[in-house]
Image 1 (cartoon, one colour):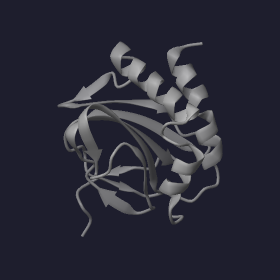
Image 2 (cartoon, helix red, strand yellow):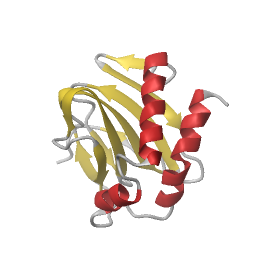
Image 3 (cartoon, rainbow, N blue to C red):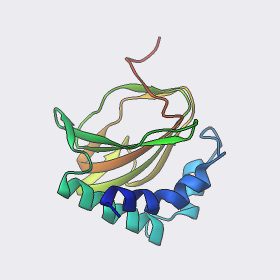
Length: 156
């Protein structure tokens, strides 16, 4: 089994749990943290695999400025796509037409992702933001319903 396949196997419980969940649901980030705690076996295994992937450069192998990124899984049949981003700065401004579910891991320093420590973050459908890491470096897994994302300046 390849390292990427091992990561997808480790993410299977998360992907299965997210089927049918609405990113607009209140407190979804807290519900995910309860179902998949950051210090629990699923997230610990995912964290180890993504760190190995970044170090081996099979994950986040593309680079744009100071942001490294890669596609882990392409959305099929309206399911979730998974992108991995390794960053320590502001990323590209974008809109989440169908929402966004993120799992962020600290890599160096004491970073925050959009002002939050490592862990789960959820954006409702039709929200816009500039993903920002401050205080260090993070690796973020972006789970996008239907693979929907639009890179654009803040809508009027």
